[in-house]
Length: 90
Image (cartoon, rainbow, N blue to C red):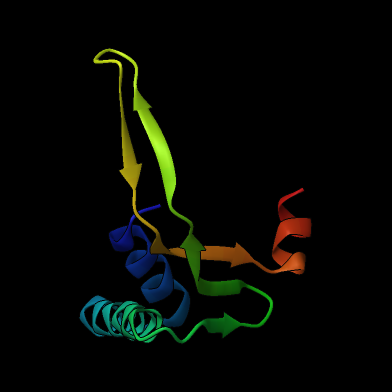
């Protein structure tokens, strides 16, 4: 499902104009992104959490060139679904 499809579904379900729903959806996504970028997880009860995961430094191999390189430690954004969400998908 794309952002446009989400906007259409919410607009249809609520009767609110698509332009307004578009602004709300984009505002929500920007708020989540800003919070996670600052290192603050976002918890949405019954849906899931947007968190930062730390990846340790590791050594990778380029098989074609027979070389190794070091990938530095870094943080990545991640989504962890809530148990109720996981159970509803099963």
